[in-house]
Amino acid sequence: MERTNKKEVDSTTKIKWRKLPKTGSFRMGSGRIIKPGQIFSASLDEISEGFRDVIIPIDAETFTKVNEAQKGTDAVELDYFVQHVASGWYNVVDSDDKIQNEKRLRKDDAEKLLTKLKA
View 1: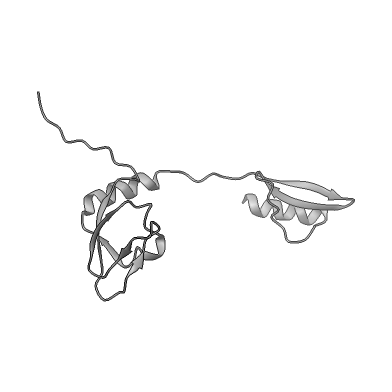
View 2: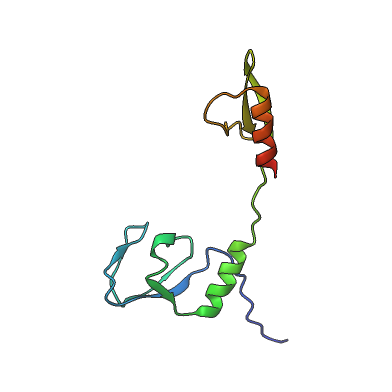
């Protein structure tokens, strides 16, 4: 029987990080304070995007695996259509019923905006 060391990697896997010295401390979402030069373990989800420029992953191999696993999700493409509001006025709406125009539009202007959004 052969031993294997295969760990499944997902976005919740803990990675060892090092905080850059001389950059001040920051508070994680859990309330934990990270001092300059401190080495700590945290998942990629626990660290906000704004602080990723002041920390360095110590285990770069695990970081790249986790980062690739997180980037694997595809964005959802929304469908747009013209919705009648009042007599002669229309809105361009996406599939989540979010209005895409600032003011109500006439039918021709709404169709022009619709073609721009779909392009």
